[in-house]
Length: 309
Figure 1 (cartoon, rainbow, N blue to C red):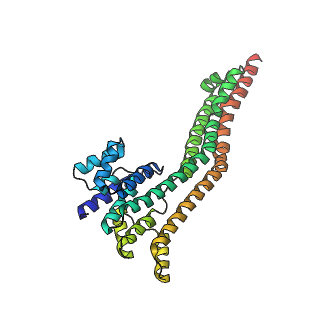
Figure 2 (cartoon, rainbow, N blue to C red):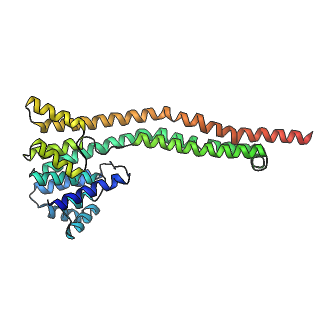
Figure 3 (cartoon, rainbow, N blue to C red):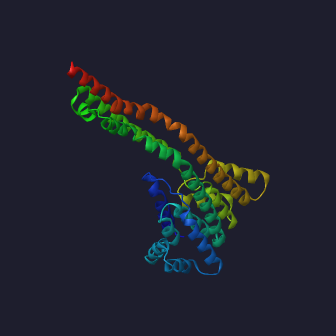
């Protein structure tokens, strides 16, 4: 691949990071990548394999073929699809550069994407119940207003005309808004994703399987991803040098362990979310319930009593 194409690949990968968008990990690319691997193992050329997928109706393949037709390098066109495809583009670049078996490389990346997608799905399922409960409880203050009206209290008049009621209205609305923002922040934090765990180790393993040295494989991966390999992978490479054993299997085992840890961490974040959501409930939602529901009813009773006297 030319230096210009390598620079384009880095741009395609790093641009979304600079804009602050999270990496999507849903495993959607895994099936297509596995199909590509099967086609390549059958002896079909890479360009023709993408064309076959495009002819079958795959939108991503159509976009890749269109870019390649305009003269874009194939790894760059793949990485430009974003999210998981950036990792596929990096793997394609590494395998093409070192001469590693492309089909086997894509199979390993497909397995990594599938594992990461399954872990993300488990986290979403685990978060669904506490997040749904939090959204339901956030409507509690407004339910209190409706309850007061249903019971015959002059809640709306008090909130709109009484000075104390106006203060309760403003305070209650502010607390509801704060509860929504706080709850959303907690859920987003619990759902956070760092891309495909262990992907750097997988990419370096691809480079080594093509006969490249450790230093050259690391350099090619850094060029393809636009980032330096993480410290955990450096520990594995140091172990490989010290023990004098092949690094490929150690790296792939490390990548598998990283995905397992990410899956466990996601479950722990989901479990912790249930208790953390009690904070906005107690600090914001319940006081808003008192301000918008209980306080106007009391003020309505006091106002009626004073008028009758």
